[in-house]
Length: 362
Image 1 (tube, rainbow, N blue to C red):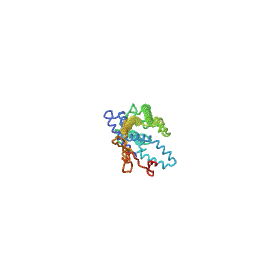
Image 2: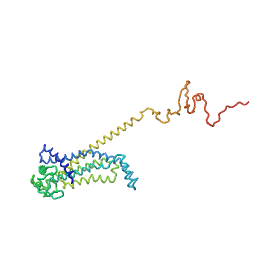
Image 3: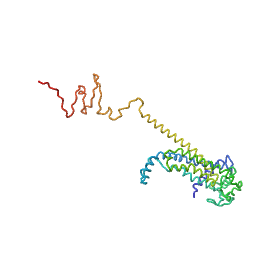
Image 4: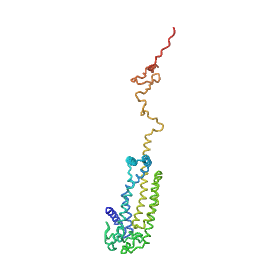
């Protein structure tokens, strides 16, 4: 049913095994373990751009948190209007919440596909996804992109004495499939490899979550829902690796460790790059503002202001031959004339009586 996931995963794993087989023995546990590691690196490299988009979306969500809270408070009683306003806000800022969880959603089918392909190397069990085959039948049956010879090589691969497709709680009937390919391993041998990997995976999960939480804004961290999710990511998920590790094949735990190591390095690289881009944008904006600002000691250009001396009704200053300053208005507007200003005569105001000189009494 999920062959569209199983075949691509198995083909990538097959390619990397062939690559490492040129350096190491094809039946080496290190060759198969490195194949799983570089399967993770390949898939995460494909998901690099969605991861960068996830980081940008998370930051944008933190920046818009005050506006989101304001909309939630304003339309608390009108859910439909609240949803419409939220969509409008997201559209204005080019914000897509789905991009925040897209990389995680894309990794889930990969994890399921890898888990199924690794378990399908040994189909002697009777559990879910198992066929109940005998060890001889299982060794003669291919596994998606892998031939029967590849299946036998995988069953022969040991990492410190433990088959990388085995797990701590594996039924004894399933462990018997390893008998023709190096003998049946003990649970102590499996635990000696699986438990340290589980501890490393749990620690790596914790530090990845810690790095993500430390980059949250104070407003986002104060959100009750965000606080709960932070505690789950910091403590519950790492403990989940320790609890679920005994039920996972060693190769799947290697996948988990490799995935967390890649995530830890990629987070620091991407966040450093985005921080640098934001600093450059701030510097460019500051430089533009400084260019537009007047230089120290320079007078502002009044010609660009409204009501400046270039307006039609502005007063014109002129210096006459005697050195006196005479003010004149535009003669076309019926205002004060230069002759009147120069002679000192004043134009009577509308409705006012002219001042007559006092007559001498006879």
